[in-house]
Length: 355
Image (tube, rainbow, N blue to C red; front, side, top):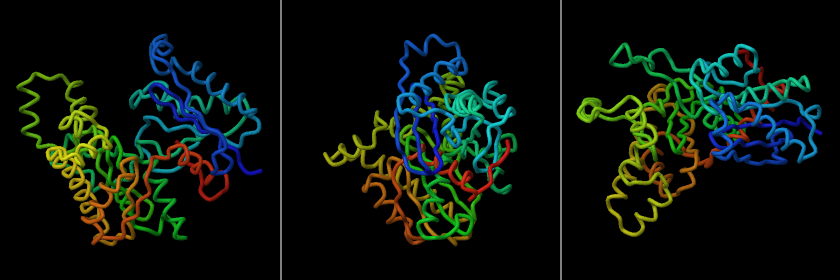
């Protein structure tokens, strides 16, 4: 028998859990949390015991006791900026997550639940490539306003996992390659992976890079400021315009790419223009991501849910294949990525990091 991992990925209204033997999934479930149940709790961290008990019931349903596990791996939450890798959950990490030092999000519970169950059986608790992974080159941090340096917020877990998976498929080391990875989902991030470091990537949350199904991406600042001031918008409303009500949903009233493609097939020319503009911006972002490595790119990887769309991937490929071969690896396999990160550490392929 190989290593056995419990993987925990909390979201706002559910907790995804899975058991993996090495990197093979053997059981999975999405534990739903009703609004009525969650209303009982004042804050996210108040849900700890409730969600932990739900995870334990999942283990019992699959006749798994914690003592039979090799490690427990949780989704990394909002932490201070850190390099990519698999991290041991320690007291400093738990303190930052519980206090919301760098922000409160349901994903903060991943490491906390993992640590609570791991402690009972004296197991290692781990997190893998949280969203705060920051490997930007110093030159990439500078913007035209010194009070607003660039921040690294992107789909680190999926980008890193896909890049490592691709490297293994061609029997190369991730650290030997220059890759451009475009994660295409509700948010879109395009990263330049130079020898294992994401030295350039757009901030996929705060108004930077291509627009996406629900995020605005880069906008003309002066025009947007004028709109905000003339409408007397609050900070919270502005944040919602940038992430949640931006991009496709702002233009077309839906963030569902499949619905938009149906509209295009039915002859909706406005939908085609907006959707093609998003594709164009993604391609332009990929072109820009070739600059840090001076065009010496081994491959361009397209991933995330929208990468299932041939309409999207074929157009992107036609724009950027002059740079490097384009490889489509669709989906956002977060559970698999978490298990793979734990496996690399437990099998001594990679050393765990300390927070």
